[in-house]
Image (tube, rainbow, N blue to C red; front, side, top):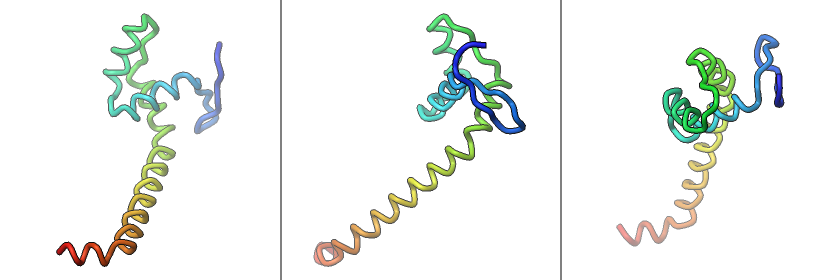
Length: 93
């Protein structure tokens, strides 16, 4: 086996490059089929749907946590902007 690896759930060994490929596809808003089209254009091995799903399950909790934290920060920022600009907002109404 070549490349860097890490340990996943249930002590399974996972490839960093596969994790990054799946994370990139999720971040771009595309899924298994689109990722395999990109891999085909690169003339590299394709990923099976079960392998994609395994990596997706590994990345899911961290991705959900990051999204939740991002939404919370955005809500707090919006709240603070409204508090800071309340007088201007009331005048405009």
